[in-house]
Amino acid sequence: MARVIPLPQPEIEVPQTLFVDRSSPVLKIDWPKLYPGGFLVPLQANGATYLNVRAYRKVSILMSATKAHSILLYMGKWVPNTLCATFEWTPDDKIHTFDILGPEIALFMSSPFVKSTPAEDVELWLYLTT
Image (cartoon, rainbow, N blue to C red; front, top):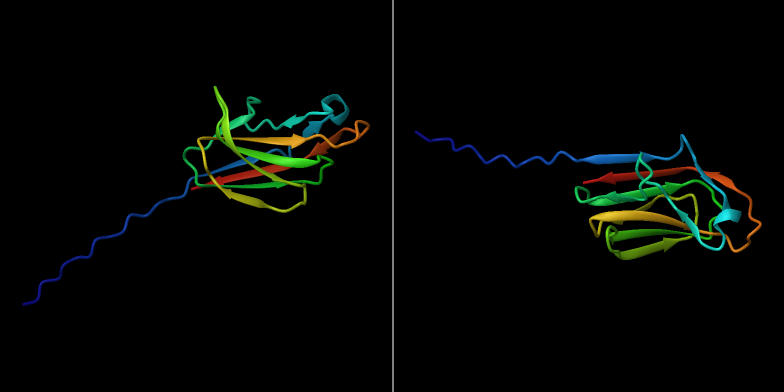
């Protein structure tokens, strides 16, 4: 009589996700006060400007229309010393997705070239997944 040997079952990985919603409240950016530098985006509820991403593999970022000259995503070691890869793009109302490279991320918006650029409200959505 033939004996049935059960096949090993593959392990199922349940994805972990984290959603950072900076649309309510919006990011209030006063460009004249920040000129000529920029705005380091608070990514945590306590106002911290870096986020631990060790448990994730991908990050997607969508930012509403902004007068910022460029957006910079830093990935790597942020605290206490900085050693990061930098990804830069101009604001374009598109979703930008990156593979996670380091244990932490930070997001920076560089000031417009004109000091008289008025303050603005900006919405940001950041999605992390395994």
